[in-house]
Structures are given as C-alpha cells and as structure tokens.
Length: 215
Image (cartoon, rainbow, N blue to C red; front, side):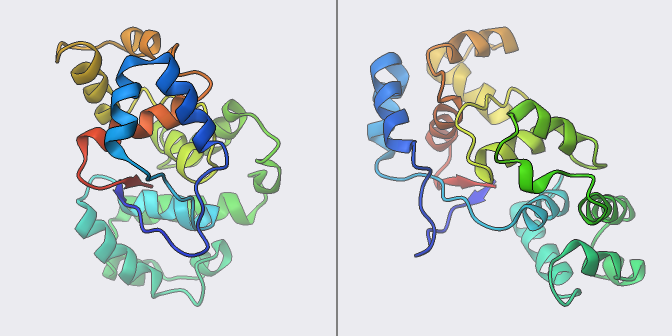
C-alpha cells in the first residue's frame, strides 16, 4: 500500500459519506476512528491492467523498491497495454529489475487481458466473488491482491480482506486489546460494518498508518 495522491479528476466513492454515517452509528470503534482520521478517503485511479501489473511488481519488496522497478518497467513499452507488454523482450524486463517469476506473472496477466479471458467490461455488473474467481486464475494474483483490487480500483463497498495482516492487527488493537484475533473473530466484528466493510477496513488501516493507504 502506498500514499494516496488526490488529483483534480479523482473523487472518493459516492457512497463514502453514507458509509461513514452508518459506521459511526453502528460501531463504537468507528465512532472514534472516523473523526480522528478526518476528511480523507481513497481515490480510485488508473486502469485495470496497470493496477494489477503494479501489484505484481510490488510483491515482496519495499514501496520504494517497487516504485523504482515500476518506473523502469513502465518505460519499456510504448504504452502500458497488454499487447505492448507482450511485445517486450524478457531480457529487457529482467534488466528493468524484474525477477524471472515476476516476468512470467506479467506475461500471464497480459495474456489474460489480451485474449479476452477476463470480462473487464462486465465487471461493473458482476458480483465480487465472480471477479475474484477471474483474477485469482491469473498467475501471481492472490486473494489478497484481488480484494485490494475490488476495494481500491473497483470501489466495491463491502469487501472484508481477511488475508490482510494489517487489518487483523488493527482489529486486534481496537477491539481485543491487542489479543490474538482469528478470522472468525474478525468476521464477528465486521457484522456491524456491513454493508460497508471496505470503508471500515480502510479506517482500520488508516489508524495504523501515517498516510492514507492506496493500492
């Protein structure tokens, strides 16, 4: 996750204010956290292919390293499109700082987009589970990555990313006085968040981070 940069074109999800009102009424922790965080919200940006490609490049490296490699990789194709990426030479991608595994993942991602295996234009009408199923079929895309994509790119309002360690850490701190938290515990806490689990998760992340999170 990285810091969010608000742009003139970017706007928060249209449901954000409604979700905050709901959460402050239903949940004692959110009643405290939302005013503390203040008037900030995530701003969805970028296209689907670039967003997922960035997630692959950033796996298991620091934010700074991920940005450096992304900048070098993004300078290779004429445009950041699946077809342009498929035309790149493996050696050039490796020289940009990508591991052999990440090169394979990026090629598989580009193939999925270019071949039409993904129903990108229909994602707006598809439910979360169907989109996740398509995404995790791509090499290098985990359930965590799919959940982050739903929250930050598609702005889906009710995603509970149980594979996110920071979310579990935050639930432990705010709801269980730091005691260990199971997935069942997290689900129980999130019952009060529905149908705005994505928004509540974002405030939990924000409570532990000095800058707004983005994906």
